[in-house]
Image (cartoon, rainbow, N blue to C red; front, side, top):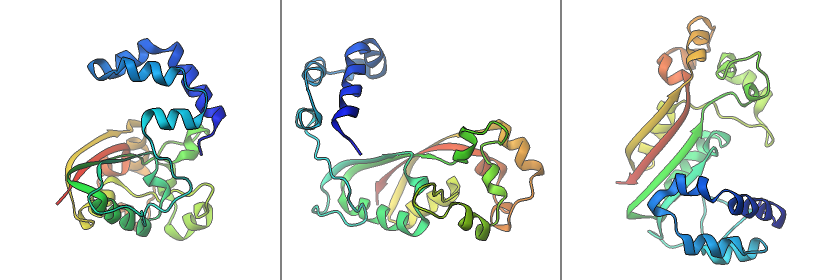
Length: 208
């Protein structure tokens, strides 16, 4: 959830790192907007300057907006924390909200998040657990991970009425070696090593 302290930290970083921003955005960098953001003092100022309507908390499966409202919809490291049924509902709602020429872009982290703080385990360590045990370990609102692989995510996109435009993935090489000898549940045994070892995916799609 955004608050004034986070906004102050973000704007302070932007003031001190304009060269980094120029390197990222190049010709799309808008100097006039950057200068307006740099003089903002709180969350409300930033949202007004950027013309952002911030809704939190809200239900992404039931958005009170007309059909074909948005040019783009995106998420970053979010989808892995939502259960399969709700992802399907959210994608269908996103399809309704997107203009016919709109684009959806979802960056997904497919790794075991516990591995980020425990160097003893690899990024796909959590795939060894059967579903019943994983529900006990991680089926909660604080550390939920759905363990969906890229192939499963793509199928959810197609079922929601979206056409896949691109799928960019990064594969964790360390996990490939681990998965070759790991005892995996039946659900994962039928999948390719590349699918299982994919660490991140960027899925872009348009409405059919």
